[in-house]
Length: 350
Ligand SMILES: Nc1ncnc2c1ncn2[C@@H]1O[C@H](COP(=O)(O)OP(=O)(O)OP(=O)(O)O)[C@@H](O)[C@H]1O
Ligand SMILES: [Mg+2]
Image 1 (cartoon, rainbow, N blue to C red):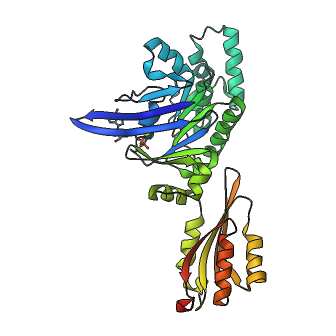
Image 2: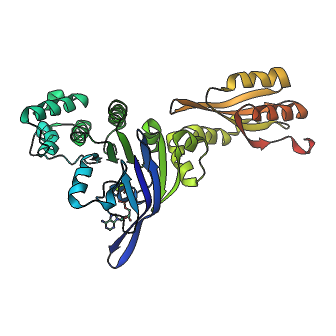
Image 3: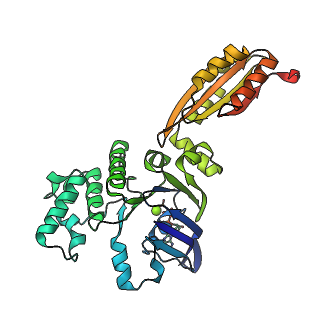
């Protein structure tokens, strides 16, 4: 749906060059809810603004949307192409002096639709975002979440194929954020619109995206499916973001720093076992005791659901005979589980 090829953006400010986006190439597929995450100043907004050429790449980079190379279009063609790319923002950008209805109707002014058709369409859009009863209200009479719903309705007026969301939930409380994300999911699924979400919150990515790109200092440093990124992050920044959206490492840290909870004895092995998908820790832990005579004391357990796939983590202390523990460990590794040994008190007797 969207292909960005070798995008570079450089700004000139006070005779200094700011390299905001550096050689970014991305592929966003039709139907994706694609997340772009990074800290402030990473270049997220600049990159996403190249998708509708609000920001032109300052090199020969190419922007291809729905099989059209936007960089090759003339001004009129570009105006038409942009109609099919909706955009919403952190601060909603509504026109405060006109009603909700008029805000949503605004992009339809030169659409060639009759007044009746416009009324019908706006009402349909307001219904979709759950604001049919607010048509005559003014933006100042709405909550932040309601304003963003109006902005979404307006962005959908020209039946876009793509919706770009720049920090669309950053000004909202967690509950309202969740309801807007649910609406975006619905827009994606019901209308088949490809969505690009810029955020600095991994929780947002975890909630709705199927793919994500991590940006740092103008570069995309890691990219992939949500499941893969959450289970096998490579870069430290990605790991830091994941920690903000899961409870795994925090829980484990608490236990590791609490000696009474830990209570390790000579011969024990402290291990972190992670599972992805339908395999759960339950039969595995039972087997350790029945087949290997190894006691597995669970100190911590957690399940995160990412893209409808459970990701389980267990922190266990394994106690038993040395050779039994060795057998148990290799059994764990052979069972679609990832094993990480955090502490090994078997001494030289392994
Ligand atoms: N029009 C501009 N002129 C000069 N510099 C700019 C311009 N727009 C952005 N920049 C600079 O480019 C870099 C990337 O900015 P950008 O707004 O894309 O980051 P961001 O990841 O969206 O950050 P935030 O999370 O704060 O929105 C920053 O150093 C910023 O100061
Ligand atoms: Mg930004």
